[in-house]
Length: 398
Image (cartoon, rainbow, N blue to C red; front, side):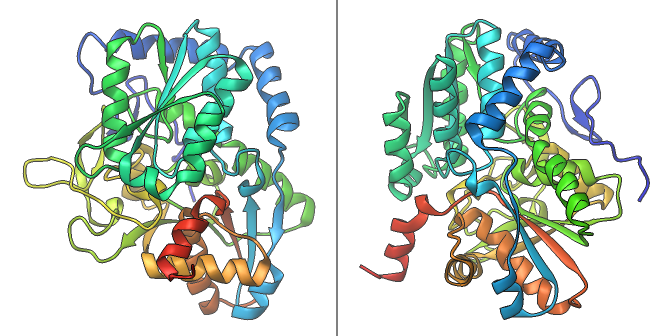
């Protein structure tokens, strides 16, 4: 593997052909200011110290790298390791970047944090970050996702944040992003948009990528300490934050990387969210990237059993990595993800998020085909507490 892939956007915010700032002229100065302030603050010793102390003493980092010996023994083949982001405070990787965003917002003098959420994990994480740094917070969430993820909705409200129910269109993540953007446009001088993934206009894909890269940095140290040589890194992909968090620091190595998209119920329009698999380049939410779209370029409706993956776009960094062939993107359907959810729960006593279960499902498939001297590391991006009621309903276990 050459070192040409540095995963760094140019000054206009493009990763190769993807990304940028597709914005009304009046908003460009707002996003340029965020980019400018971020470049200053990210190298500020006081900011770095405060952020790192929160990661250690508040989030509980580093998260463990766990050898799933029971699962490995049961399925045979390659050894499977789990990067336990599910053990973070708030139960997912989202806290890594929301703390950074909250600190940045406060240092910029913003009075409110605003964001969208799908599965609710980003909403909980941003509301948590807002509470710890002392700033107001508003979370927009699709009505369908609110019904599926009520435990997270209650957590967001208990943390003091306001939840805005979105009933437009598909009533899920894409519409929540639309709604949050509209709210942001009303007062961009005082509101900081805490985007929940490596999506949106520059500099957000870069900002979220940078904060999430702590995952891969830790894995590098952990495998060196334990003399583990990974052959594959694997993560689920919706917007792509947890995946690039694992992949980023391995891009200049020979390790194979696989991002797992949701195939949903079928590959019919509206039944899946396999953006990199079936989409084509287009514009959405201020960026140019791969997009599931109709003939007029409008985003198609999407579906996934995992609310955090039902997004018709993708982070531009992943679009670039797909085109360059550095990362392979595959799919797992709803049933396979649910089966993996139950398998990991019963075999290892670890209840994964339905989002993460997509990566677990593909790892199980792949491991069976590999020799036992091969190693797969899965980014277990979140825990499944939020999904239990929904899974019980699906399986009719009440």
